[in-house]
Length: 361
Ligand SMILES: [Ca+2]
Image (cartoon, rainbow, N blue to C red):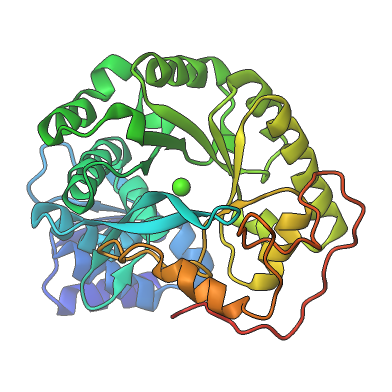
């Protein structure tokens, strides 16, 4: 293999040095080309064992394994988008199904080039490129400025990664400046702690949470129910909102998941925390959530993330239409009177029935 590698690099005129069998390769070639070539030539276990160092330019060249450089190469779109200021904030409605009102919109980071990059892909790229902290602040500022263009008096949920805020006063500076620029009211902004279940340093989170409260913002725990931390976090931090993770919501009809949601709802009631279910895609899921006492929801059933906020209630109108055959409660609620909304209801979960799928429209 070493021989083949040497022959290939030589034939391409790439200056290089190989140390050990093929474990360490330093070169002065085009990094993307060398990495691509090595990935083609080496087997998966060999790729793991090889480290590469680009000797061009840098005073302190960095040696990393081949897969690391490949990931950097694969996420170059992130750098270009950042330089060209091409990231955007899109909006997804959060619906109070009991009053048919839009409670708020969540601000979601997106990039549209030849395709749409999801928030997860963008955050992963920022993490791989070691830019997540700066990017998180950039995304928050962008969210506020974009939200103000949509509706200065609307309520918006803005994501943040607690690990990117080491000192709230300092790290929130650009966000606060954006708010001052737009004149938006702080009480209409709710900050969502992403991956809250994975956070181990609850004292740090509490400091951030206190900062938000003191400054008049709302505070939500996102991705709740995926780890073992949820109940404790709700008790300790007493957020205004908790957002049930999609993986929990989409399995609501399974007893274990249903029981977890029920427990969270009970606890939330005790502390006056509002529960929001994320990832609601079918009427069947919505009904099962009602049975467990969850009424505030977000998901494709009500609307996908969109670049511009869709005129009020379009998602709700679709929903009303789909539920047309169902009985509405006296209060005009969408929730049929036959469904108990109290947590602890012993009504069995509704099974999947052929309902019109609204996802994707
Ligand atoms: Ca979120």
